[in-house]
Image (cartoon, rainbow, N blue to C red; front, top):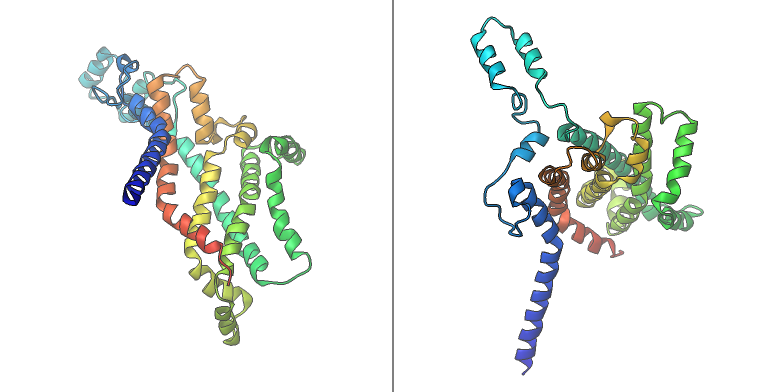
Amino acid sequence: MVRRNTFLRRSGFALLVLAIVLFSIFPFIQMLSISLKYPGEWGNPSLIPEKINLEAYMELLNIGQSTKNVPESVLNLLNETPDLTKEQRDAILSKYKSTGDVFPFLRYFGNSFMLSFSAAFFTVIFAIFGAYSFSRLRFPGRSFIQRGVLFVYMFGGILLLIPLYKMFVSIGWISVPPGAFLSLLIIYVVQTLPVSLYMLGNYFRTIPFSIEEAAMIEGASRFGTIWRIIIPLSIAAIVTVFIYCFMIAWNEYLFASVFLKNFKDLYTLPMGLKALFTSKNAIWDRIMAASVLTATPVIILFISIQRNLAGGMAAGGVKE
């Protein structure tokens, strides 16, 4: 009877986990399915397309679009006129190139990557030194400051949006693209720094202080100890925090929609996806393909750090 109960419990637990997994990944499967279907199949409930449609992906990635809308008579004229130079041919073809508000994935990807990478990089740099001071140094108000860094999470982003916007407007940064980009970068660093300090601080406490003492006896400075001892021993946690900050900045929309609204060339992927959804090019296969392209980098990064993230959390909860 005990074995039967154990088997039933294990089976029930496995079915519960499977149901949760299917419930979680179903929207992504549906999104991928619609992006690969032709318009005639959008009403088909089957998740497997009858015929694979890659036109939306090719259009968003600007693959094979230069001659897509060129009339056959113009192509014949170009083929029968070999005297035309390359510049003249490109000038003729450019008149027939699609100029609609199509999702420029590569430009938005570059903007999102530059902004997210910069924010994650500076956050990790500040977090390493801040977390080390919290975990190793003793100074007045240390406990108050350590707990106070999480105070920012008591306020929602919508409450901080207007004060921050007015502050950066008053110093004239919002009126120029570099200023708007830098303003958003500072906001992302401030948003991700508290959790980064908390995670790295707990991880640094698991490193035996005796190792640092031995290095200091040998003549290493405090900075040398951080560079030669703390960082190499915490590289897994540092990479995890970096990717965590990267993903937060990658998916952020609220602040980006306000600070970058006047600079279309600086749009990030979430902003570009919203602009595509409200434009005349809002076709379901194109929207779903853009969503897949936007979510893919984050999914890959999360899968790559999942084991380190779980291990870092567990190790961060142990004190020497």
